[in-house]
Amino acid sequence: MEGKQYQLVTCTINGKETQTMVDVRASLTDMLRNDYRMTSVKKGCEVGECGACTVLIDGEAYNSCIYLAVWAEGKRITTVEGLLGPNGELSDIQQAFIDEAAVQCGFCTPGFLMTALEILDSGIEYSDEELRKLLSGHLCRCTGYENIFRAVKKTMLQRLGRI
Amino acid sequence: MYDIKALYEASSVAHATELLLAHPEAQVIAGGSDVLVQIREGRRAGMELVSIYKLDELRGVELEEDGTIRIGSLTSFSHITKDKIIKKYINVLGEAVDMVGGPQIRNIGTIGGNTCNGVTSADSASTLFAWDAIVELSGPEGLRRLPIKEFYIKAGCVDLRPGEIQTGILIPQKAYEGYAGHYTKYAMRNAMDIATLGCSVNVKLSEDKETILDARIAYGVAGPVPMRTPSAEQAVKGQPVSKETCRKFGEAVLLDINPRDSWRASKAFRCHIGEVMAERGLEKAIRRAGGGI
Image (cartoon, rainbow over all chains, first blue to last red):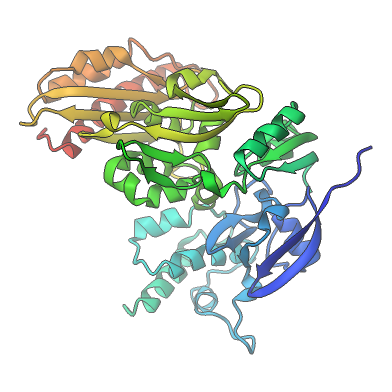
């Protein structure tokens, strides 16, 4: 049997520089959950369809389940754990999810929040149709999406000073 | 954990060739949105992988001196859609790849992977056929360029020789200058779906916008590999801009396309929508080219 292959991976997770030895067969989901206890990163379908494992890599949303952990070398990764303020305050988008009742079982929520963050950080005012398309990489079996859509739209308009 | 036998990370294009020659059984992995899913399914489980993901020199879109648009093979779909050069000259390609999968897939999926997997349903492929794209490959014997039509050999099989990787996709100036296009994806869902049929149309009109100087049309899923339909292109060349011409265009498509019956759709249905997509696609492309119809 061939020996296991490991690689040292240095990356920034939620603003903190980190380093760990990673099995080359690990997905980024595996590394974030097992090595860093970032359990907001959910294991859903593990084939890039449900979006529950979504994280930001250098500001763009990726399914971390179909991303090799060793590719994270030198990257800046953001998960829901990085959204909290210094005293544990919720961010605007998290608060909007609560206010709009966009969370039921909560399994899809961290992924949705990450995609929402890429949308909000772009600073662009999207139409309803565009927003729906941008949120289409996530499955939610509880809410019917309408409340999630409303939470993202409200935060987008708030950030742009429209409401 | 993925069932991967070994992972070799290429540090340059030449290194990728070396690794592929040293490990002839290895599979190239670019973004991984096909390969990793196939490993999970078991279809490619236990394989050696040569990763070209970190070759940043293969990312980005450039306009070369002679007007050729060069798209690095590792450029992601979302970066193609957002790119200024693409928007200005061949916007329809940006629109087509914006229909692949969902947003996260479009951030990781690459145009090189989309063409090298040899799949007929690839949203980028039909549009690249309609733009007369050239595929650039780099291997042990150096660079090789060939028209995208010759790159596709049969379903799931492209002309990649041992040690070769695709480094770029080129669109010559004469292929896009003066043309306007339109891409239609017919699928059951608006997102995260594979095309039942994809159709890309480009058209060049005369200066007075009354005559079609040239039209190109290509399909995905109308045969085992993406294809052009020469009968339809011939039928409208030099014809006046009119509804009648567009109708003829759609009819002539049926002489060339050969879709199959599959669990996703029947051959009869694909032929029917193929005709309608050609007719409407040409109308829309004509409008974009400034023609009144």
